[in-house]
Structure formats: C-alpha cells, structure tokens
Image 1 (tube, helix red, strand yellow):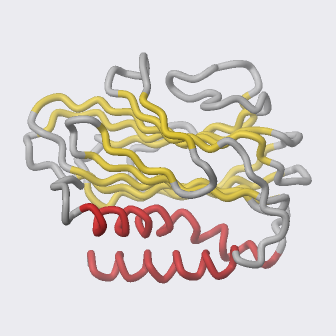
Image 2 (spheres, helix red, strand yellow):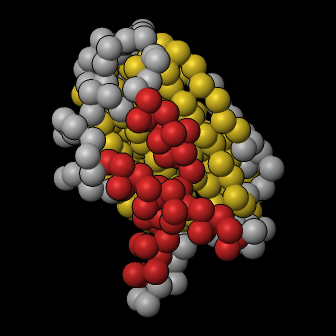
Length: 237
C-alpha cells in the first residue's frame, strides 16, 4: 500500500511538472510556511524565493514541505508533513499561505483534498481560508481574522475531499492550515498530504484533471526528496 502511494505520488508530481511547464503567465507572489508550538501565539516562518518551502519543527521531528503555483487560470498550494513526535502532549500548527493570487475571472471553484496516510484518529485537522483582503494567513490561527473571508472549508479531521464555489476580485490570498493535537506515546507516526486548487468556474478543460489530482502527491514528492537528501546527515522525518 505504501509503495503504491509513493509510486502514485511520484507519477502525479511528474505529470504536474510537465503540465506546469507550459502554463502561461505564472505570477510570483508572497509564499510563506510557518509553524507554532504554543497554539498560535508565536510562529517560526520561512519565506519562498520561488521554490518549495520546508521546515523542521524544533525538537518534534516533524518535517513539512509546501509547494505553490499561481497563474490567471490556476492557483494551488500543497502541504505535506511527516514525523514522529516524542511522548507527551503535541500541539503543533503548520500553515502555508500565498498572497496576491491573480486567478480570474470569478466565480471560482476551490477543490481540496485532506489526505492522512498515518496519524491518530482525530489528531490531525486541516482547513483552508480565502481572504479577499489579501493578507498573509488571513482567517487562520494566529493570523488576521478580518471580515473578508470569502471561502472557508471548515476543519476536517479525516481523509476527505470536496469543492466549494466563491467570488473574489484579484488580488486575494489563500491559506492552508494543519493542526496537530493529541497525546503521543512516542511511537506515533504522522504523515499527511493536503492541498487545494482554485480555478475559474467552469475551469479551463486543460486544468480539470490537474485540479483533481494536484493535492495528492506534489508535497509528498518534495518531502520524499528532502528526506532522502537529509537522511545521510540527520535522523529526522
């Protein structure tokens, strides 16, 4: 099962890269990945210079990788995490955000996938917000709440996928949050790959398949590459 999942992730990632190669008008925007171990009161943040982002949560052996893409026809964020926390309470929030999304015209379809390969039941929750105010982490824990959240999936604590429609005027921002909260026995293995795509409604035909598969494997593809490269030096997930 795990071998099949990895093979699927690699195949999907390769297909996405090939498809993205000819995607027109790819726009650069602020892209950040951050984590908190105190319920969102403080965060450690990594900012992108155009490529995927990665971080390791201090002392918890949890690694996260996020990728992002945006154009006038398509926007996406994928967030993958993997690790093994030590014994005791675990309260970690990991968020990926991107501002200045230019996908248009409205209305939009937000397609999301929250996939959990391993983890205690109810221990991992994910949620997505779309912020018309174009703020970093708008609507998410520790971020600005505001009154311009135009789409919110609500928290999902199990493997799930779905879609919803919303209206927004570019530029706007999107945030994906994963909240890990449970008591670890020291042997719990965490692994999750979640993500979403935004396309105009109806979506251009060339992006329909991409939108349905993008969140499945791109983050785990980058996470696998990162883990492989660092396993020679560090014993981390």
